[in-house]
Length: 458
Ligand SMILES: *Cc1c(COP(=O)(O)O)cnc(C)c1O
Image (cartoon, rainbow, N blue to C red; front, side, top):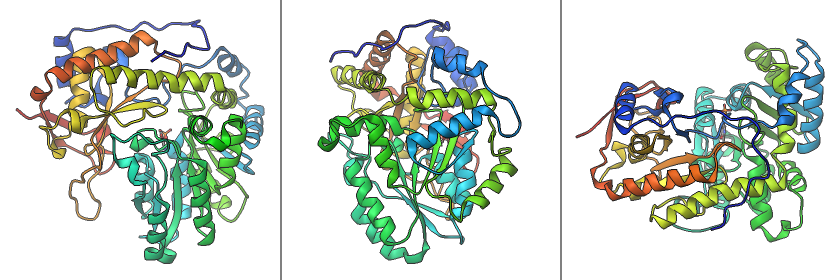
C-alpha cells in the first residue's frame, strides 16, 4: 500500500532514545507492569494514546501568543465560541479542560433519578465511569459487525438501532439519554454512518430522549462518511459535520483528539434549554468561570485554530492513510486486527494473536507489555483489563474483544516509525506462545487500568 505523503514539513524536532531490551525489562517491572507507570523518556515510540499527544502547527503556536488571559469575557473565549458555533451549529458552547470534564458536568444533570440507563453505540471508559458516578447505568449497543474483528465493513461503529428500540421498550421512561460516540473508539476507532445517525435521531426524538454526541473524533468520522457513504462523496467535511451534529441535542468533546491540541474540551447544546443553567453551575464550581472553563486563554486560542486544521481534507487523507498503511504492514506479518483500520488507531486482536491466554489473564495487556520489551513501543489494552469490575456484583467483566491499541499521535511519527512497530509485532508473533499472561495485584474501584499493579504469570 502506498504511504500518503505528509501535507506539512517539520520545523521543530524532539529527540527520542532507544533503550536495550534488558533496560526495558527492568523499567516495566519497576512500573509494576503497568505501561502508564513508565517514564516517557524510557519509551521510543509512544502509541499509548492519540489524546493530547498531537504536534501543533506554527499557526496554533503563534495563536497561543495572542491568547487573552482575562478572567472573564476574554477575546480568545469569544473567538473560540464563534468558530465552534459556526462549525457545529450549536447555540451554547462551553470550553472545559478536557473531554471527561464535559461528561462530569453533563451526566449528573441528564440523569434525573438513580438507576436510569444511558445507551451508547459503545461508551468510552471515562464516559462509562461518569454515567456510573452519576448513579446511571451505562448500556452498550453496538451493531453486531462491530464485534467481529475479522469482518471488513465500512461503518462498524454504528448503533444497533433495532436493539436500541428494544432497550427503550424494556426500560421505558428510565432511559435518560442516548450517546453516539464518533468515531466509536472502543471498537477500534470505527465510524458511524450518517444513515445510522439519522435513524438513531429519529428513535430518540420519537421517545423524547436527549441525544448526546461524544465527538472526540468528529473530523475523522466525517472523512470516513465522505469516503464510504456514496451520498456524501461530493460533500465537504464541513457540510458533513454540520449535518451530523444537526441530529444531536448535546455534544461532549475531548479537544485533545481531532482538534489537534494538547489540552482542552468542549460541551455544546444545540438549543439553549432547561439543562444549561444547572450545567453552567457545575462548570463554575468545578472547572472555573464559564469564559475559560479550566483552560488558559492561550489554550482557547490554539483550540480555535486546531478545530479548523483538523477538518482539512488533505490532512485527513494523510491521517487516516497513515493508520491504513500501518494496518497493511501488519497484514504482511499476518497480525490480526479490527478490520478495516480505524481513524486514529489499529486495534490488534490480541485474543487471536495470543490464543493460549484466557481473557482473565488480559491478552491485550500482555501484548502491550511485550511490545514495549521488544522495541520500546508503548501501547495499551482495550479489553478485559480495561473493563472495571461490575459495580453491582464486584465480578470481573469480560470485554467482547481483547485488543492492544496502537494509537497514532497526530502529525508526530513518520513512515519509518510505523515500519518499526509492524516489524516488532512480526517478531512477537514468532514467539507468541511464550508470552505470559498477567494478574492484577492491586486495583482501584474505577478506571483501574491507569493505576493498577500487575505481575506476569509463569
Ligand atoms: C478521549 C475520549 C474521551 C475523554 O476525553 P479526555 O479529554 O481524555 O478527558 C471521551 N470520549 C472519547 C470517545 C474519547 O476518545
